[in-house]
Image (cartoon, rainbow, N blue to C red):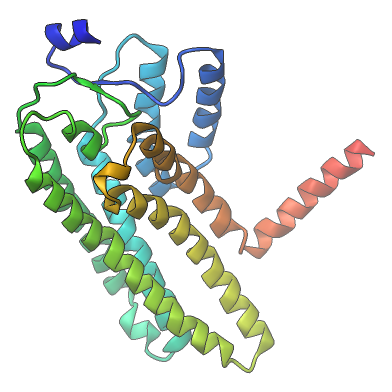
Length: 278
């Protein structure tokens, strides 16, 4: 590591898995997960897993693109908040839903989410690439995480700390509060529904989205808002596995489980396997 530090100006990633047979098996499992995802989740996970796999299987340990990961994560945080607002309007204000959630408004929400995520990502990326680094170039992570990279800087990064706090508040904390408020009103409205079938359908729809929200926001908020003295590279990598791998993998599965046709297909598949065992 010291040799690399003196001979190169490039950053290297220490990775997630140990360089042995166990690490190789875990890597193949992660690659399998990579091919089971929807488009949005595939774009998000593509910023981490391919580079992690390449670094593990080769002697090169270069960093991944910081800009794309921050863009995807920030945009998805806002999109989840808009999805909660969509559920709120559909259940609490069904008569106003066609006007408030028209196709044009949905396009504006998507474009706004991507634009805001890109601007936030650009600010962090430009800052990270224009400060001096004089410590070891080895980043103890499996992707180019902003705080892990800037911990190697040889200057006071108080500006970055405020940037992280602001970004976490705007893209994680406030959307999460918005989602909580939206579903608070939704649950209140569902509780007063007279139709049992309507309550069941509303609870099913809301529960799937809330599950995705908790899996996505909880590790992110805990990672970026907890005090610095509580951080450790091992804990940060474990938490990062949730929002870079497990959540994108589970999202399509969770959303599919509320689809009647998908549930019927799964029932038929499990029935076939049960008959084969007998």
